[in-house]
Image (cartoon, rainbow, N blue to C red; front, side):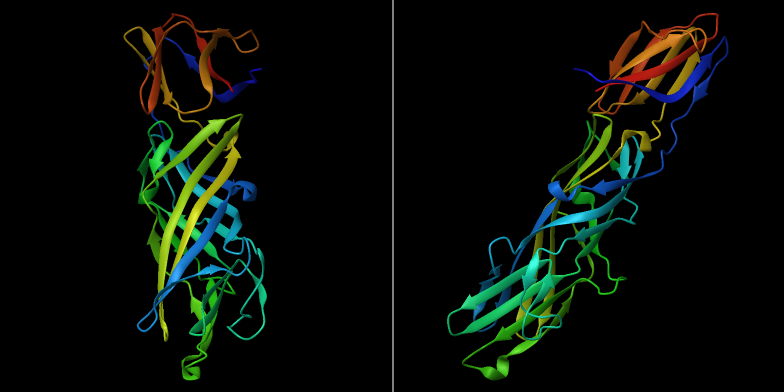
Amino acid sequence: MKIEKSVDWGAIILMALQVQLQIVAAGPVTFTIDPTRSSITLSGNLQNSTLGTLAISAQSAGSLTTSYTGSILADLTPPYIQFPGGSTITANTNGTWKPAIGGGSGSAPADYGGQIMDGFLLTAYFAGRNFLLDVSSPPTTLTNGGFDSGLLAVTFLTNTIPAPSTDYSLTVPLEPSEDTNGTLALTGTSTDGPSTAYLTNSGGKLAIFLPVSITNVITISSGVVTVILKGTVLATAPASAWPFPLSVILQNGQVSLTWPSFPGPSLTVQTTPALGTPWTNATGATTVQANTTTWTSTATNTAQFYRLQASF
């Protein structure tokens, strides 16, 4: 069954005048992250001059994957999408892991729990806590709803208390003087890995699907720790949150309506000679391009109201 929704992007009166409305910036839209469909996995390693490269493994099944909540802020001005900053992509606590806060003995709630076990040579525990990310980008071209995630910059938000960090504890049984513990601050901005992200519109909802692949490298006394975050974040907003831009031209006896091409809804031009009377589907020619759709018809000598009707 199709659910039809009249999308009120403004009724337009067209008479024997030249009328042109330019597409303008639609402004920021706040998308709410869906934690049931947003998860990021932590991996990484410790590079030590004596022991080589040692991979971080899970302290327990699932301890290196967690879901995310929060919001993503995006400016929608087709054919562009831009992330201006101001997003809060927040990791959820997924368990209680070693070490304790600050790297001490014991354990505490954390977003991630990892470890390195290398026989009698090394025992290390890592607990990622308070992970909070922002995303930003220049205006990025939308092509059939897709855009390059490699143009996105992902930043650890450090203006919160407590700030994003990884607590660690390393024990070297044969060299007790090498034992160390503490907290690694997660800071800075990383470029997201190249992939295809999507903006879609279906069932009355806008959705952003963001692949995440970033790397953070920190130096400690025992070597270099590499932290890799990889996964996906999906966030949604009501379709009504996006003021749909529309260009209207009346010229040389022709009326043309142009709007962004967009995956999801089927849009039909409707007309009526007076508000309060039935709307009917307008006859005309529709041209669809990668980023815009244009409908053109012969203008009449009487006033007409036009609207777009979306069918999902």
